[in-house]
Structures are given as C-alpha cells and as structure tokens.
Length: 239
Image (cartoon, rainbow, N blue to C red; front, side, top):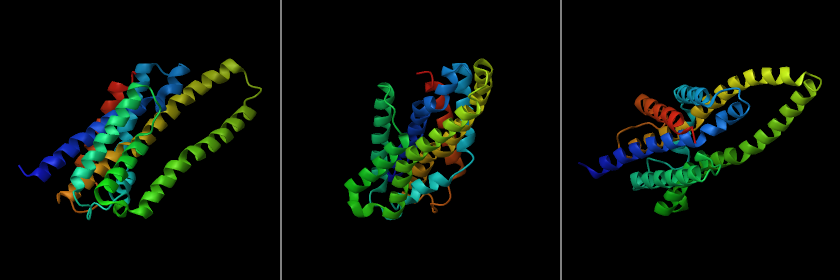
C-alpha cells in the first residue's frame, strides 16, 4: 500500500479521535451550570449535549474551510501528511493531559497551535498563511474578552430587572431557561469545535491528491466528525 495513503488513513483516524476527545473534554462547558443548579439531571444533560453537538456539526462548514486553508496552504506544504499527523498527535496528547488533570483548556487553541508549530518545524515560518493565521489568532484572543464584557452587561441587566422578584419563583423560571441555553451552547460547540477535524481531514485529502477544493468539505467527513463529537460527549461527559 502506498505510504501516502497509509498516512492519510492514519490522519483520518487521529482526526476522528481528536474530535471524540474534544467531545468529552469540552462537555462540561455546555452543561455544568444546568447540572449544578439541578435544571437538568446529569444523564439528561449529557444526552442533550451529545445530540446538539451532532446537529451543530452537521449544520455549518465555514470553520472547517478556514482550518483547511487559512493556517497553512495544503497545496504547497511539503510532507504535508507528516505535518498534519504530528499536529494531531500533539493536540490529542495535550487534550488528554488537561482532561485527566481537570485543567480547563481550549481544544481550538491546541489544534491550531499544533498545526502552526508542526508546519514551522517542517518548512519554517514562511509556511504559515499569515493573513489567515492572524485572523484566527485575533478571534482566539478576542473571544474571551468579548464574552467577559457581554457576560457582565447581561448579568447587570438581569440583576436590575429581577432585583425585586421572588427568589424561589425566579430561580425556578431561570432553571427552565438554562435547559435552552445548555442546548444552544452545545449546538454552537458543534458548529465550531467539530469542524476543526473536518478541516484537518480535508487538508490531508488535498495533500494526498484525493480531494481538489479547500472550499468543499466532503459529506462523509462532516458526518464522521459530527458522529465522533457526539459519541465523545455522550461517553466522556461523566467525568
């Protein structure tokens, strides 16, 4: 069997493993609040997160396209399959270490940094697509800052509106809303994080001359990554 084909198969397996690990690594982000307030039982929360992760992953492919072409150019990357495989193994190792020790960590930061690092090691800094890479880094840096500001504003508004409301009755109503927010957060997690592996597999297929367009994510890739994310969420969410 051709060595390039073997590497591509290994990349697909590792990318799906990364998505699976990402699923149970990040489950708590979506359901922790709804479980801690007893809005949902843990079993129901995990099932909800798994289903919504799958649905979200099947809805969009924009992030996958960005991963495919905006970090490095898969058409010009020499030894691209080796670079991608090394990046996946590094990101998987980091996710497992942080999950085992209960350290909050971003799978997105892990895989994007791993791809960039592996590409630089293989071909120098010129291998990076700086315009796209900077755009991704800006989003990674700005997202927690924007979330902090919006969270502060929204909480201040809610506190002002409900300051004279009955505490027990208000908490009961808020628990119902938390079910919706948990579902939405799981959905958006699927639309974002599951697509990292989609982009990586598509990049590997292009490198191996098995796919032609970075703007076209194969349907089987999307379905496989969505399934891996959903299964990871359902199995690993208990920890």
